[in-house]
Amino acid sequence: MLLSIIFTSFIGLSCAHLNSKNEANPKNGVLSERQASYPANTIEMPIDHFPHKDQYKPHVTGTFKQRYFFDSTYYKPGGPVYLYISGETAGTNRFSNLKTGIIQILMKETNGLGVIIEDRYYGQSYPFSNSSTDNLRYLTTEQTIADNAYFAQHAIFPGVLGNLTAPGTPWILYGGSLAGAETAYSVKTYGDILYGGIASSAPIKVVLPYPEWYAPIQRYGPQDCIASINNIVAKIDSLTDARNAKAIQELKEIFGLGKLKDIRDFAMTIAFPIGGPMNYPTNTWQELNWYPDYNSPDFFEFCNNVTNIDAPANITAIDHVLAKYTHGQPWTNLGNYATYFKKNFLPLCPSGDYDSTSCFGTQNATYWEDSSNGAGRSYLWSTCTELGAYQVAPAKGPALIMKVLQVDYTQQWCNWAFPKGKYVEIPKTPNLLAFNDYGGFNLQADRLAFIDGSIDPWLDLCYHSTEAPLRTSSDNNPEYLITGAGHHWDSYGILDIDAEPMFIQQAHRWEIKTVKKWLRAFKDWKPCHTNITVTG
Image 1: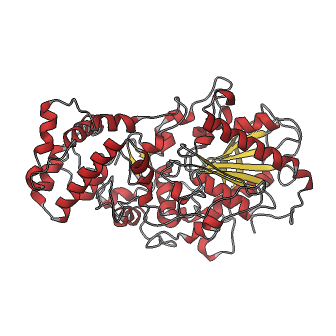
Image 2 (image 1 turned 135 degrees about the vertical axis):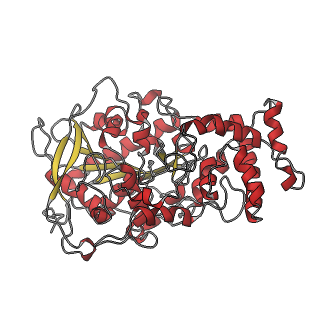
Image 3 (image 1 turned 180 degrees about the horizontal axis):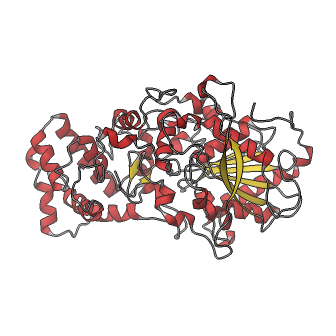
């Protein structure tokens, strides 16, 4: 789909041809007046940190220019370095974290220097001129976290006096979402180089089907709206179960999508206001935020329209059109749902060719093979090879999306996007051990903090998952669950902690105290192998 898609990725992050969420939503990159932008610096980063591993054959010996951006406004000699992991978007889209967010907060409190490192295969940090299947073989979790360790040992900050490299200087990492997992794995693996880290909303235990993405919406969304969607979806599922082609076509026409052939494309498209699977063109539950400048309340606008009790008769009449297929039972609020959808989503396809890949269709296999470098393709690669967590309908109980949306729907995009190369072939399903071998819900490392939000759609992959054991915090292994918060809400700030909502204010004060405790103990830290190198 050649739409301006917002991904349900771990920040956001996606389809092979689309922009990442933060690239599609510039509000996530807004800067304060203190500084308009940061100049880009580059480091010559080895493409292959593991020249003896068969997985990366044939090995290359070159480097690529990896971008980084830093802010030394608050730095004083002896202060720490805070490394913000950019994750699945360009580093330029993370400037707000140096300006007003968690890195600014920590820099100010501890006289630190903040730096954003752009992940390999994102922004302008590409090792190759295209992202063919073979060229993507160096986009793995272990290569990415090795970048972080190598960077901490070799980084130079023009205009800043002194040697700030690790382990002589305390380097503390921060990442949210996928970058949160990269933070946790970096500290776990390279604890002799990297002093500590805060992993926010980090998916540390991944699965293949992930229906739980919709669980917080089901649980915490406006219940009249949620019940309406549940009932409409249940009725749709009854039609697909009965293979009632005539009724299904009538349903498609009600949404203005009669031309959309594949029932799964239809199911995904009408789910756009809710989110997923994998992508959606407007803001959803995941884009809610505590701070108005970052908040995108489209989800509540959708729900308010679905439950409109003052809808005109021509709209409420739609609720009865399909009653002949459901034993005379009306489809309550179907007219509201379809009317909202047609008003807000059909204009995104001005050609009216809704089944094309330029609009809502996904079934053109050759379309997915475009190997141009892009955040969407990079994120899809990681999803297909290691990450998984395909959003699907639940096996039982109420559902917000149609049950035709299952693993096979996402997997087909993987197979089309990444045909077998000369050297590399993607697995039949993602190799989840690439994440889970770091410890899953039992992951721990010295000075590794986990912070999550209780209404985050990704919560059940995170440290505070409802499937994880009861957590007990300590100075060495701190943890914090922000009640009522969404996806890495702690990463945002407004330059005034006292003016923040209490639940965010207290999370930020906890992070400040946590880091200060670590820094006070730095003088007693004795890394086992201070001369460790990443490559070779």
